[in-house]
Figure 1: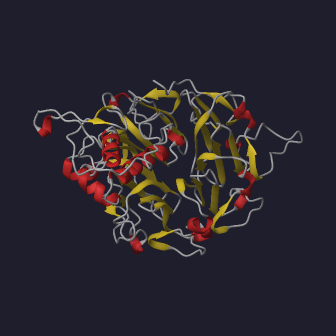
Figure 2 (figure 1 turned 180 degrees about the vertical axis):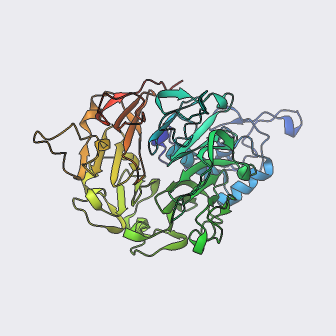
Figure 3 (figure 1 turned 90 degrees about the vertical axis):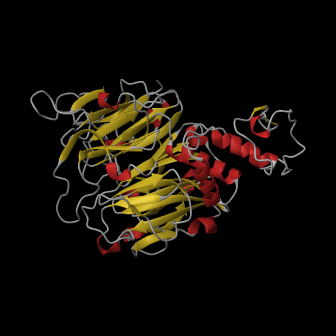
Length: 501
């Protein structure tokens, strides 16, 4: 298991002998349910009443599961249900839990470069927001004059005091936050997606409000597309809101429907560890006994669903190309029109619309199935981020590579002009972002704007919790007020916020 993205140590439990626990443990005369069991794998007391039918390997895996924040509060029945859903083994449950933590930075500091606004979550779960507040998407409420004001510096969302946030996502004019108790808070436009023709969400919510329709689902991740929103439950089930007309996401509902609908089809009985939303499609990283796999659903234009065609899919469909390439997917990213995956071996695959070279294959061709980025063969990737025709890749040593639309300062290669008043050309193959080398610290996460309607900006988060920003900044989304007549910044600069606290 590759858990490098989150800094989680790789767990090597595969070689633990599958011997019965009976006879392997020293017990005392106390009643069985009070006996203290010392696990030979961890060499400290286990924190649960043992099941004497478990092997040492299963006992060790179960003990590790007990230490995971989303697993610990589950009831015994819920834990057993999750075990069966994962394949009937505690080792498989542990793999599922660790995979979700690794690819989503769950319970770790994170920064989200939304469309015109930004969200930053510290390692302790406090949340800051800054940038455009045109729809209340910063969550600070109204000014004394009754207006919503843009913020040019990170500002704490005070109404969330006492609530620990573990994951955040941002869309056009709206923000969603997930707490460590599985609750979902939303603010900004009061909708879960835009209408295909016209605009939804005329009502504005200026402070974080609990999403009542999700109160009975323990949510661990949310993803916002243009026409829909998706959430992922603790048990690995995917639910979607909106865009159900014509069965586009496997259900027939009104676009304004605020009830979560389970994603039907192939993923109903397969646990999902990560979801990623593009403009009009959804990717799901699934964890099965045989390994990790990727499913896609939604609009197939440009080949972005990865099935070798450009047809739509109303239900999740397995992307089979990864088996052909012998790649075990570990992280998925869904850009507006193209997608990417990082494999366990560090290889990167991209597919979909290839405009501006955003697939990194040296041309602007579309790819309707995942294709290995040959320009990264000497790089072991651990993280990938995609936006509107732009892609970033983070290597295991913290180097950052990008490719795609050269018109945008958010790519990291733009430093003004080429001396003749022209912007840089498109980057068709991966190039090292040399401006981030000057940071002299390992980058662990990249986030960039994933919207076709806003100029993009980019965040680079370092191992120590420092945040660097570049790209569009006219609304304050870089965490600073730019100079007069300046609307963007081409090189990374430190944001005045410490995400390690």
